[in-house]
Image (cartoon, rainbow, N blue to C red; front, top):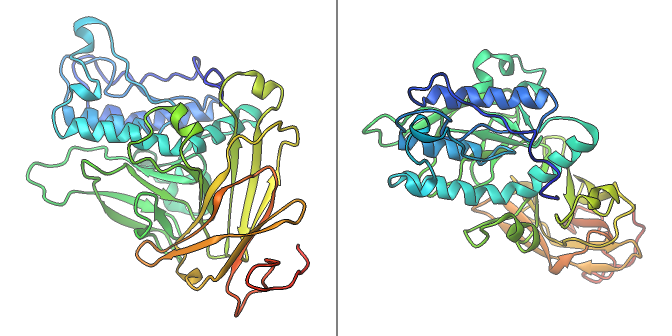
Amino acid sequence: MSRSTFSGSGAYAAHGLGKEARTWKDMELGIAGVMNFNMFGIPMTGPNACGYYGATIEDELCARWIQLSSMLPLARTNRAAGAAGGPPMEPYNLKSPYDVIAKNALIGRLQFIRQIYTCLFEASQDGGTCVDPLLFHFPDDDMTFAPTMTENSFILANALKVVPVVAAVPAGTKAPTVRTYFPKGDWVNMANTADIRGNLLKGAWVELPVPSNSEDILTYLKPGSMVAFQKNNGGWTTTTDVLNSAPLRLTANIDPNGWASGTLFLDKGESLSELENKDYEYYKFHLSAGSLKKSNLNNKALYSVKGLDELVIVNAEALKDTDFACWITNDEVVTELKIEYSKSLKTLTISDKTPIDLTILRDLYYGNSARDQNLCYGVGGHDKQFYM
């Protein structure tokens, strides 16, 4: 996405409740403020991490505020000039271990940049929001309408439930937790896919461990959602690094009906003319019944920006016996794919030797030969069959 496409007018400054000091309540109310701006039609927004005014600053508060802001469309620090703004609040000015928390949050943010860009692109073209209260996505669940719901978690980019730490950890607490509500379904932790929360029959309150110094902010993939994810172990430090160099993964969490869907926007991020000339890739994906279907939402794309390195299906214990996979081009060229199931992570990973060119991908198939129709012609000695 062009860096100039979503800038300037979207800034939202959570100045705080007063000029004397920044408080945890300031940070908490900032979440509702970002949601309001999204509803006003300004999705590229975020608070001033660590506040705007304040003669003093609490390092733990500032670190958690930066961690929260890392999962909002606009992540920034900005403070009043001179004494009114208080002491420096950049991550490297915080005391240990809070400097590490802040640094890791900014690195972790880059993993979701492609998903955030996709949501902002869609909002710029068709309207919509990128930071929502739970009730937007689960209107049939009365609990999501509770007044405090908007202040302890939110849905980012239509697919990710983010659970920030909005209160100080009591001194001497050995295993601090944060309490949050999961609507009905299986929710999968993006940092540890073996961590699956929620209930298939009804919503549930859950006590989650507060992230340690080295862990990402708590982020759970919504049932039925598929997101762009680019794992960052610290090797990618800028947006350009991630957009151009980091491997691209589609992560899918199949819902109880057996499907997941998502969209993906890809551009070079160099100029506004890419949008004006429709010189970008834009796809919708639907995963169900052992098949990944791709719909091309922009037939004017002039080039392939980036290939797909992996399809990762989480909460995939039912797929552990998958023994075939392939992808098929528009010209019906079939390529066998590598299959890897992780028992510890409960993930099924499907990949090629080189990134899959999304501009020519028609279908991706996977399954078990004993129970599923094998549509992978030439793979494992199977004859050609009709493709649907």
